[in-house]
Image (cartoon, rainbow, N blue to C red; front, side, top):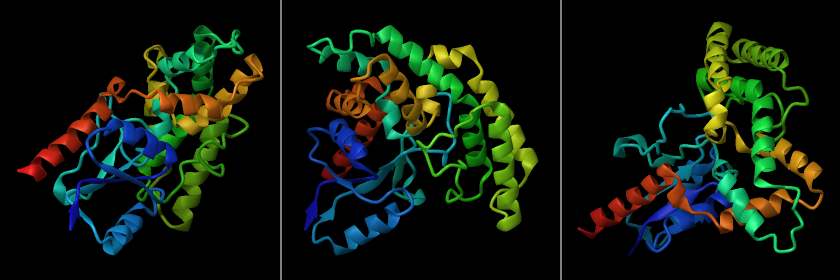
Length: 279
């Protein structure tokens, strides 16, 4: 017995957003394990399923595991390279922090509880937060670029969203250099310090450009959980009743995939698969 297509995703937010992307196509979205356990989860689910899908693939965050490109791109592999489709933006939450998302949130503020939290304030604060994270994100991208396996972390904290207390370039570089040395000495997971520092200069130069902020490119390149960690506190300082959880929930409920080229491409990819199976 066969069924229509099946898309595996990592988390709840991923499932809610991808369901909006493929709305009306009759595709099932199944939330499962994170990126490290995703393949095992897919294999186990399919092996134990009595209904075989006509096609399936996993959709996952780019994180720091795949190269970023200047242009918006959806990573769609050829059939011989596995069944994983990778977002253009670093994480699924990066699609939720746009000024348009904030305006939709404000439109629902019937009681005007957030009158001091204007769109101008939001744009100013999110840019300030991004600028403060530039060195840290440059280090994370650099570690991701030179590591041999994606099991090696790109941060010296407990994980994404746990932002270091000090974010200046000197401190971030020192922490990154220490990670390179530790990896080299323990398991040779990362090659050498010279490659790390060369990558850092490349990324930091990009992140120092005014165009990078004017065109909101940080919403593509910077890890959203890191942005959210600081942004939430800054917005609460402007408006104590503000809830980042509520904001993100509204952003998902009001989400329009057509605003993002790679998600439009994802829907087109699914439609193409459906048409192929129908022939």
